[in-house]
Length: 118
Length: 112
Image 1 (cartoon, helix red, strand yellow):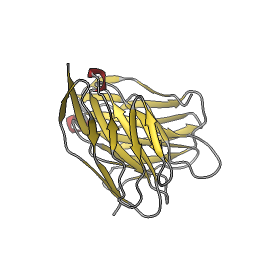
Image 2 (cartoon, rainbow over the protein chains, first blue to last red):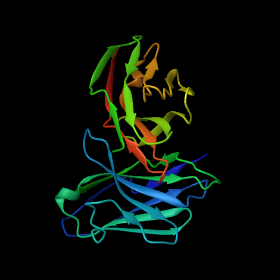
Image 3 (tube, chains in turn blue, yellow):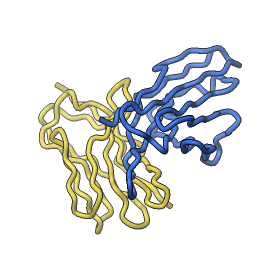
């Protein structure tokens, strides 16, 4: 149980184009999904917190117009990198928190999407 | 502020050696503590967790004990295998907003 998928697993695009990455919780409902960015040999940097049916909350320094997040249902969140540039090349990882009563910190992570912008 | 400090890598060991990766945290309250593992080319997987003081999380031969008095959650394994080669991240769940705060990761190389 608690499986999170991401699509695509990797994508190469030209500078200036937009790329959409999907994050799905396959066997559970996730009221909250998180988007992270990971640079080579570094830790995960939280970009934004996505709650179903409401606007995402972005971390300081993350451009919300650059990284559009939509959480359309309890099982799907999307991250769109708009007008991508080479510096946006990175490994993007989503995670989902299980819907449950009471506090629950545990998140389940997707396998990640490697974006390369030429 | 909230943070996780873990030993820098890379750590290189021979197969069947004893492993310790140190981790300490700074947080308010009593957060849940996690170790995540990232195998080459893959996403993060939860390795083990502990939700309260003195709890011991264990999985695949790895163990870590929640030490409130030293704010530590050191990862140990008695006999490592080549397949344990990966990056290990110590983390905690921040109570006030449920965000997870990660350490920088420790790369582990196990030599046959």
